[in-house]
Length: 335
Image 1 (spheres, one colour):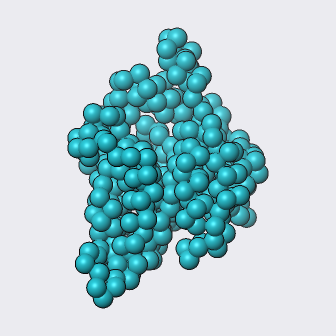
Image 2: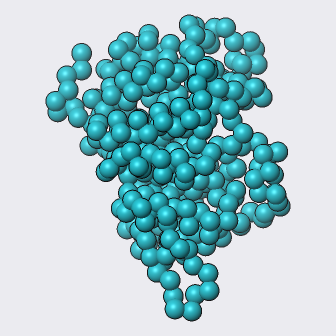
Image 3: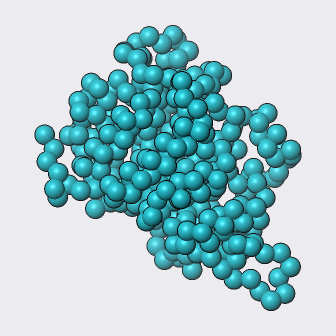
């Protein structure tokens, strides 16, 4: 069966706090571990009141302390925001504390707006080649240190930290193929280039010491509930958050509303109409059919599911349903 993983943004719901959101992330990771999910990844975003995982390595340490076996990683760290050495040290520390469990997914977007990107990096004048160079430099810090090496990552040097290239365009696919690294595509929010990126990655892939054949993990929004109607209602939280962000009104994660799309003005309707998401929303039967179709169409080697549900208990139940239909179908009856 195709492995299923989980991407968590540590959402801060209206009326909650970042601390509670991070504790929810740890509880969700424990839940995912018991249900048989392959990985639990967290993502770096900045200046967003509804997302608490900005300091991704710190958040992952909190999650790691509460889990035992599930792989943990970044989906991703936005490498232009950081010096490669500091990323290597942070994830080297995680790997030293939790050996054999840490992944490092990196992307080239800032994960925020331009003003905040400037506050993070101070300098926005990097040339187009900066990201590939930074990735290669980052990879070098995880190799065993040479006797005369003047700069090394401690912890980090010689540790097993798999690096993934993450992307939402053709650029990341080409880089991952050239370096022989696994590739994660953000089809959960930018599906327009999905087929093209996967085709380029697989066709141009060059085997490496890290990977002997291409490996693609694809993002998928999943909202599962007992009925299609309830799942569609819960999905309105993510749609509201997306429209609010795209129209310059980011905030905490709002509660769901009935018939949300019908209440939108022309601008909001245009935002959703022009967006390309890969999503499966519905009852157990609907989710299973949608997931099977997505995997058959894309040939995904792994799927990383994500959701933004206001009620944390409903979120736990959504991932339970997904696990029932996709991870343990042998003992699950879908009605």
